[in-house]
Amino acid sequence: MDTEAQFNPKAGVLEFLGKGIRRILAPNPSPMTFRGTNTYIVGTDHQVIIDPGPDDQTHLEAILRATSDHTIDAVFVTHSHLDHSPLARPLADQLKVPIYAYGNSLAGRSDIMVQIAESGLSGGGEGVDTAFEPDICLSDEQTINGAGWSIHSLWTPGHFGNHMCFSYNSALFSGDHVMGWASSLVSPPDGDLRQFMDSCKKLLPRKDTIYYPAHGAPISDPQSRLRWLISHREKREQSILEQLGTTPKSIEEITRQIYCETPPSLLLAAQRNVYAHLIDLISRNKISSTQNSSFSASFYLVKK
Image (cartoon, rainbow, N blue to C red; front, top):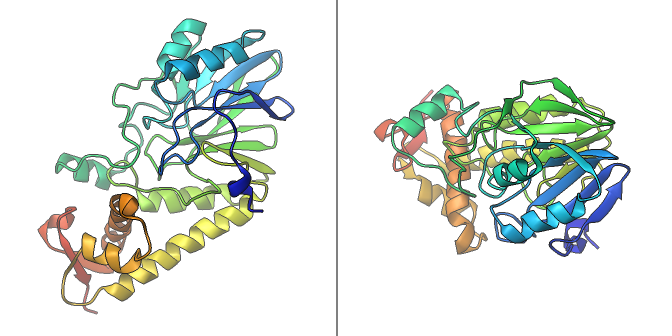
């Protein structure tokens, strides 16, 4: 049976995944979060928490119960979508520990996404935790050492500008950048497709033996999954180009032609993914658009 089909843990129950790694599932299943957000507890006597999850009192209580016999040194957040970061502040305040992340919800945003945000397009998908502020901002390739634990941070923008992955021994906590149950949503202006592709290629040479994503089951062949993600996006780009001609088409038209079997509830997310590709294609002078490349613009091939 497919690993993801088998993945159905009970929310709030502590599970042991391997040496120094435990998981508690948050009670927030949805089409965007699969079974819910995976909160990880990492370390032995002294521990850190990765991705506390949504602002949910029952999940906060489950984390506190699971860690009551251990010393918690820090909270780490992969990125500040509403299903990942809102519980970080109440948890950190109760435990009296710092929050580590790349930065607030505007940190890491590419120049083109800054322009798109300034034009008035708001974020899509899981929703942005606009109030999120870490206590300590991490840089790319930074190692944070504690009592019996060591976390290495990797800035991996694409799904979100402030997205980070965290490595612990031979494992990588991949957040929403790499998941097994679905490809990562890239929704402008929060996400940037060129950044996403570059981050995939950045992770590809690494020797991590397993990925623990923020949603879904562990990924036992990370390099294979990364290659699939890159190929998937390259094929999606080709499909979009095949739908375009000299007559401009809207994002909705392109999306319905490509995502013909997608449930209606996910079509808006699909439109955001298409828009991410279109922006990238414009930046590479492969296509052009009306209305300054806005979400309501129409798009067409550039004549060679």
